[in-house]
Structure formats: structure tokens, C-alpha cells
Length: 329
Image (cartoon, rainbow, N blue to C red; front, top):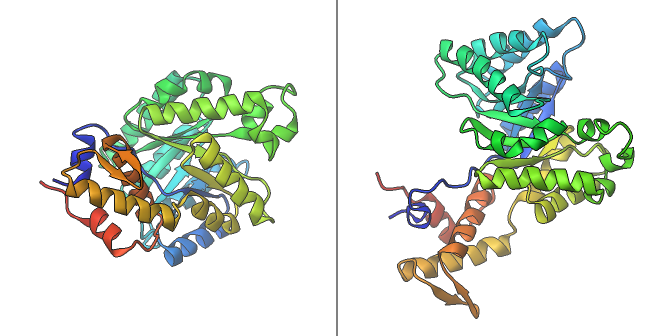
């Protein structure tokens, strides 16, 4: 049997998405990000932004541009999504009609910003599904921004929706929603990792995702000149808060984010050694390096190898043999 079949035995396996979600709003930046994705491969997702990317009065033309680029031959990896206007905006239905209607087959996902409740997400989901069905797409994944008090309150219920793949934390809107009760310093490091209300929001959102095997995506780093700040934020988001994905708003942020979320080679080697020993014992408990391991830790190390593969890490031969073996039919 395939390792995943043994270790999860019919249970949901954790969803894995590329570690970096790169946002682009203007045509120039959209095309640049597509070219970079072709160069690096699908190591990161691209989100074309209608909410903040469309100039006032130009919403329809912007949506048409997004649809044409998503549906173009340059979208080779099919890992491009679109952030729509929020469900209360007069432009939301138009975004859905144009983008989903024209590019449903190639869209990786759509992002729903600023819902205030589970009900808002369900309303948006219904509109998206109707347009997707007309375009011949049975299920179009949804990514939901958690940036309001109501959405945070309903995060568990939102993450439980089968169509939802990921929740993203919108730190600037969340802080602003407190009307000065949280200082502006909490939008950036170090405040974003220490202010109690922001820490609580991040932890609750990440926990909701993991409870339902969804992907928690960390907020943007506004510092675009210093890659060390980006790398530090990504490392803390992963190691201290349980995030497995993070926004990028500048091409220079992509590589530091991907690197921060990619397992180190030493951990890949350890995972390979432990899983090989487990297979030799028919997945029973083993002693390795003086420590006991069983299926609970095997599931962890199996995910390490899956994340390394997704990030494009050159796996050792033994690790590649594990993750690339065909599943039984």
C-alpha cells in the first residue's frame, strides 16, 4: 500500500498549497509575475487583484484583463487565482461573471475579501458556483480573507466549508477595524507577533484551518526593500504560529518566503530515514536515534517530504522514491 493510504486510512490528508501567494494588481506586474512563474515553475501561486488593483471607474476593464490573462497560454501551471471585490460591492457580481465566466477552467481559486460572517461567504460561494457551473467547472476552490471581527468569529465554520481551501489573515484591515485601539505598529514586525489581539487572531485563524485540514496563509510584509525582514516574518509565521503559506506583494519577497517554508535538507533526510525504517517494520512502532516513533510521527514526517516536493527541493534518491511511488487504484 502507498504510505499515504497506510498513514491516513481514509481520513482527510492535509491540503498542501504552494507556500507563497504572490499578489499583482497592475497589468505590468501581472505579466511580470507570470513570466517569473514560468521561470521558477509553480513554486508559488499568483493572485491577480481586482479589489485593490482596479482603478475607480475601470473595474470592468480590469476584470476583463484578469480573465484574459488567466485564460491565456502564458498561464502554463494553472496556479493563478483572482481576488474579487467583496460580496457587498456592486462590482462583485460583475467580477464573477467576467472572470469565472471566461476563465473558470484555468482559475486555481478565487479570493473572497472582507466577509463579515459565514453567511457572507455562503452568499459569495453561491454566486461563484452558479457562474462556474455555466462555464463547465464543477468546483472552484475558494480562499477567504479573515480581516473583520465577524469573519474571525466564524473562522471555524468558514474553514469547515468543503469548497474553502485556505484562510488568509488581512492584518491591516483587521487592525484598522479596531479604530485606534490597536496601534499601527501592530501591522508590522515586531508588533504583529506580540500584540495580544493580533496574536489571538492569527492563532485562532490558523487553528481553525488545521482543525479542518485547510491552509492558513499569513499576512503581507509591507517592507519590500529588506529581504531579511520578509524572511524573518515568514520564519516566525511558520515556526511560532503554524502558518504554511504567506502573501507576497513584491517579486523580491517570493524566494525568501518559499525558502522559509521549505523543510531543511537535514529534516528531509531524517524524515526519509524514519519512514524507510517504518516501512521495513510494516509501519509498526520503531526506535530511531534513541526515540520512539509510530504512525503519529510518521504522518508528520510524510508531510515533511510532501512539502519539500511541492517547494521544488531536490530530494535525495530515497526520499524521491517514497513520495513518487504510485498510489494503489
